[in-house]
Length: 195
Image 1 (cartoon, rainbow, N blue to C red):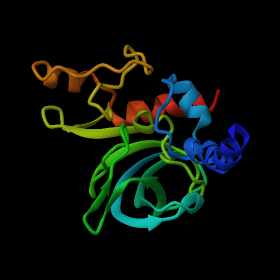
Image 2: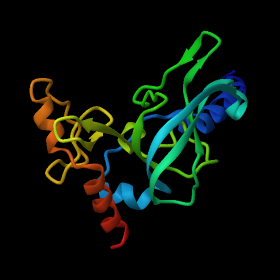
Image 3: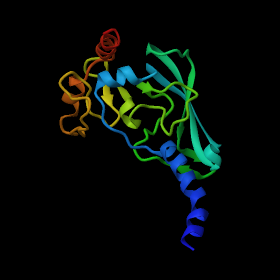
């Protein structure tokens, strides 16, 4: 009896061991130099379009979204503008799939991304899921584009890139001014890539 149950469940267990890594959205915090070395693509981009669609990885239907980016500045990688990356989640015909920790992108957003090469199958094409997506926000007081983590934490030399600190709404203008400008951040990453 026990052997029969095991043999009946074996295909299910095998399928789970194959599918689980594809749909895993957890990540280990990494330092910026590690991100810079591991990423296939590092780019200052703008989201041009979002196209949710049904996909069938490993025979199971799932909603994925094809995100088309235009490149403002390419720091690393072999892609040309525009290029697309596919991520798990989206809405098709009233059905929505949301992956915890997955950035909810919008057309027109300006981002700096650390990503895997297009064409590779990942739940998230971004290294570390939301860790590999940095928002570019305009500092109206100084007329400067600044870099924030996806969750709003300023990116600068004094902030540990592994940390995850929620920004304080009271100190928002000061925190924004403490963030690297896009040019400062691009120079930091370029130096890491050239070492």
